[in-house]
Length: 291
Ligand code: 13P
Image 1 (cartoon, protein in one colour):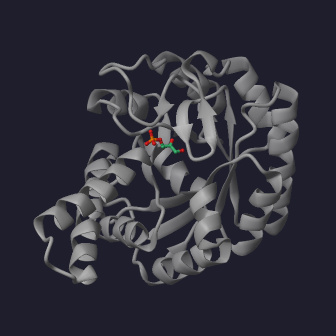
Image 2 (cartoon, rainbow, N blue to C red):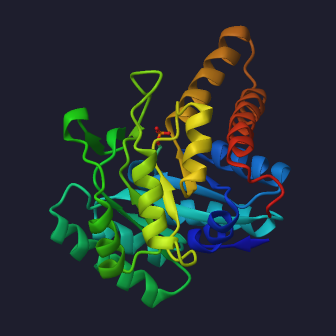
């Protein structure tokens, strides 16, 4: 039905207290499974690729898959570039047809983060139809080429967050609040819900202008997800869980069917496992029926 950018589907989410699921994919099968889930749940959805899978499959190939699937899907779909530290690659993906671009200059100095983020915002806004995500503070853990050690992770300062959003013009904003990429090392990770709520109020208290993004979805306890929704999270990123689902499902199927050489059956099994995992997330985010 519609190709959309992230901001336009996050605004109603932020207003109404639900969130759009943003799922990292590495191949066509996962891409299809995410769209299957969105259609079944009648929800807008964000499909995202980090830099390496996007480069491996090819930027234009990713966009072509996106257009083909999104144009025939009866729900709004956004294609997001996740955590690009390269301004050039952000521009390349914007030119190719990604509809949300994340420039991740969060490891740079504050001023350099602003400069790089603004350059990408200006570029994407000049093309039109593309929203841009920026990050302040650093999210711990590993996501693709980004590695942040636990003792390196820094939370976003609320006052600086407001200034960052104003000076860069980002459309959606990811403040570091203690969530981490990968599998959490403890059952109860230390998340600063209050900080998230304060930043949300300062940015969006007089009407939603810059919806907030939660990174590090994998392993967040359900009650944490609910608290982050209440604190203003309007996009939840999930990557590691889908990688585990992909590989575990392949392993499970192949172990049980050692003598079968029918890749189609394996693909059906994996696509279905992925669809179910994505739908489970959609239930937690309250996005069912919002498309
Ligand atoms: P997880 O890998 O922890 O789900 O985090 C995903 C993410 O935040 C991608 O940007």
